[in-house]
Image 1: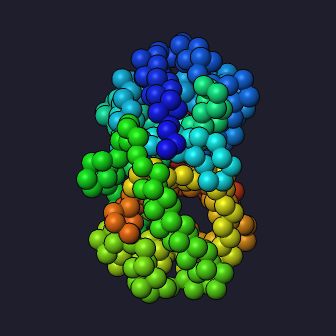
Image 2: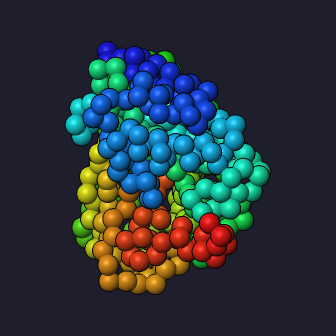
Length: 337
């Protein structure tokens, strides 16, 4: 049986060192844990960074300066072998809970507690982290401090719950047969979506989803889209607005995809390419093709998927179409920055 206990423990040690570090110690913590040829993949405005010093300077040090008493509160922690390229990865998803004490990315500080949604993928090879994918729900954070940079969203603005049965922290080993069952359900669902993209059916009936999803599914989406519950409301409040508001949808594959136990996860760089034809996110149509960088985390119950957590780099998708939501928000609400 494959075991990922060493990789899990290494990442947990890294998390502990990061949580206990101050701003001036960030570089030394990163140098302790990451490889010389380390690659970092982040949401806009961080994007891809290949230098440890730049990762500290651009990502972690500003985060630690702006948010006090940061706690990583995990809802899902898992590890597995990447189906795409064979390395071992560890994924953590949850929230960074902190006091928002100084402006961040031009967003005015609230001096109140916030829950910054995150998903972090770490590839561990030869005792070092060689790659990291870090998604942060920046628009979701804006909403928490009273900023709404986009038109009203189709889903609900809620703090994402963890798994229904509170069993997402997979610190122990799990049978590989469980992971394979989860991947089988997941990949069947992905194939069904690819078929819809190919045939242009943007308003498929509930029977398409009922093959792979529980009726009372939970779908927890990013700020700007929101969350929804049950197949019927998911289709009404996300699936149809998404599919009908975008054309020329192409699935580009994943950088990382794996499962452990009843959980599966993936991210792409980018996952999807498409063109806005009006309606999605309340945006008008446009002539520019844009990429979407997305994280999905799934929870399987029995032979169907029960819950899905999604982080989408919406600021990056908008930036490709000429809308810098961070710069615009800052110029209006925090112009002295």
